[in-house]
Amino acid sequence: MERKIIISRKDLFFATLLFFLSFALYIRTLVPNLLTADAAEFQTLSYTLGMTHPSGYTTFIFLGKLFTLIPISNIAYRVNLMSAFFGALAVGQVYIIIRKLGGWKTATTAGALAGAVGLMLNPLFWRRTIFAETYAPSASMIAGIFLFLLLWEESKRARFLFLAGLLGGLSIGIHSTVVMTASAVLVYMMIKARRRVDWISAASGATLGLLLFFLAFLYLDQNNPPSSIYNTTYITNLSTRGLTPADFDTPIERLLAIFPARSFWTYYFSASPEVIRARLSEYINFYPRWEFALIVAGAIVLFFNKKYLPEAVYLLIAFTLVWGFALTVSFGVYQEFYCPVAVFVYIWLGVGASAIMSGVAHLLKRVDIMGQKQAHLMATLLGVAVVAGLLIHAKADINLAIHEKTTTFIIEEKIHAFTPTRYVRLSNRLLNKVEDDAIVFEIWDRLYTHVYTAHILNGRTGIAFHEIFPSLGQTTLDYIEANIDERPIYFATLHPEIADYYDLEEVGDGLYRLSRK
Image 1 (cartoon, rainbow, N blue to C red):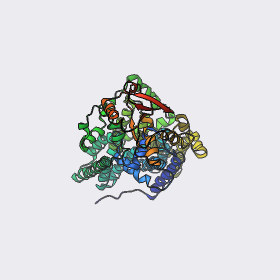
Image 2: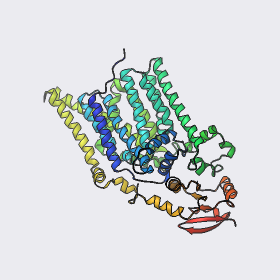
Image 3: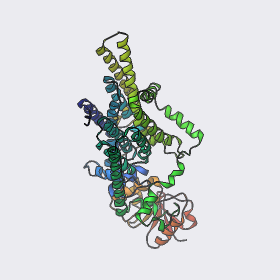
């Protein structure tokens, strides 16, 4: 007979409350409009349903499309809202996960609240919930997969393994960090899954998820709007990427070019020892000492509880794979990966707080200082103190969020401009100088800001935008040569090599029109 799954009304209430509190906080600080670089790309392609940069992010794009249908504000805001939603969902999920890992009864409620509140307010997590990016959704997917594993372990209902597998398969189109945790899931299954039906259910869910991912890829591949990464980046830079047109003319070849992100594999675990040491020190210093102690305590205490040893192994493997990647990757974009890592960290914090509270209650009862109820009350008050400590540590950000819709890290990193329409206005200045059939080359950071403004806001889809690579490849030169007599061609950022091939006329605001020598 199957055991009943227990998610009490109290736990559902707290998880829901935490979700809405987090969602409100993230909406309060949400970027209100268009951004640049990857964020602008996701804001654009979620609406137009085009392929993105490696590794494709197909599931993300379809989820983003659903959010663009919400009739509020502008398209960019709606896609930003998706990050806030999944960030808040992860907070609620972490609360329930800690409750499921708690063998400490009442103390676990306060500990779970502490872990969830800590995640909600952690700047490394919060900053990735306020604009269109894949990190908050990937954090929620990681939390969701682990939660389904715990629900299966408690109930022995194979449907939860199916759902965990389904999320895992779909998450290939969310972010590689979720894929990196697959080995941790496999180890957990090898330890816990004894029935054939369990493996079949997990494999069936994963297969369906992979199929849906592939179907999503095929749709985006065939839809191929002018804003697709194929048109903005690939067709003009194939040679620079080591490809020929023949290498990129079928869906399977394009899939292999986009996913896995082959051009990025060389960066994995490739940072210098000096960089790794600096990042390690930086990461440790992100946390107050008392908070760091609770995190370490939670990671350790699970290993001393035989009941939760498989979960301890899962968390350690998954954390090490994702955090280790962020710590050792050679490119500068690494702090973003700390967003999904925060899920593991605050599960540990909640478990650590629960264990300490339980230990205090047990000690007070054992030495006959107070009765059971009073001891549990003291443990709960200790949990309240932990939550209060987290709130006090985040006081500056909370106050800024409530009163000014910003935070210290938003101000420091200039995540969004003081004028919400700044990037749209800057793009329109460029667009006012080009024809409706123009070709415009631009660097990545500003590329999709222009695409969004031209194609979505102004409906000028005849303007072709292309990314400028550091070195002009033969494909780029061939493309320019094939079009220069038919269409006006501009460089919005002056490339040091282009003057060797064509004459340049500045038409204003750093915009150059090409002509034959």
